[in-house]
Length: 272
Ligand SMILES: C[S@@+](CC[C@H](N)C(=O)[O-])C[C@H]1O[C@@H](n2cnc3c(N)ncnc32)[C@H](O)[C@@H]1O
Image 1: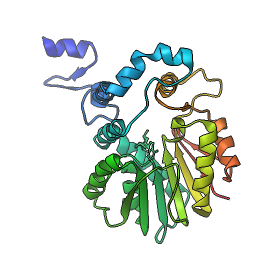
Image 2: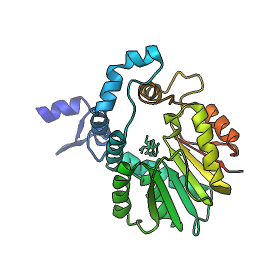
Image 3: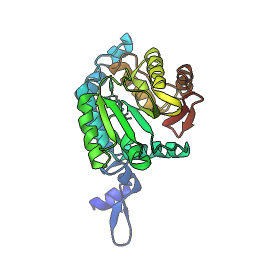
Image 4: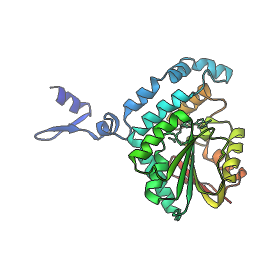
């Protein structure tokens, strides 16, 4: 009776002899699903998000954050991300972007600033076997990233450096820089300074991959990005969801070529 009811609401499908998960359930309701909704609830149960959304009215009225993301929050975020199938999908997307750029990374160096759990960097290391990959993030987060590198057997070439990703204090000469979900944490002035620093450590003609869900040009959607921007108002000093035009203008001003869109999330530009 229960199984038939679940078929009726679309959570299961039934053939002549058995029941199985519907496509919806496979995607959203089981931990191996790309969009497993449990991860959303686990991250929403975090104290900082709870506090921020509980005092959202205050943030909107004052235009100021009510709390700030901290190292514990980011460590938790990295743990969820390391266990999330969607992180592998996104990492594969970065690899396919770099593949399309036809880069020979055999002796190359790849930099991921604010690398989080490091899935993108480790996937690039696996696929392109560059000489060196460096991920920069907070010390607490890098414990998670180091586990990912071990699991993916790339610990010989992927190194993690703890520190302020926005200072970009690494030796220059990188062929690729990845910055994913980082620009949204800052206001435009800080982002411009950050991107100029990124440009300064890249070789000419290096590739910049930005992973950022842009808000539509008229700021009427997508809904989840607009909701994210409210969270950014409540939990960052000046962070926001930016339009593709805003991000393009920023990268041009920082010394990159024309930014091209890859799907919804990624854009790519060359250092010039
Ligand atoms: C939204 S997460 C993105 C993580 C990863 N790039 C991704 O796309 O999954 C932002 C990351 O920036 C890191 N971060 C924030 N502020 C930082 C800072 N000042 N220095 C270094 N890392 C920082 C956080 O620890 C976190 O891992």
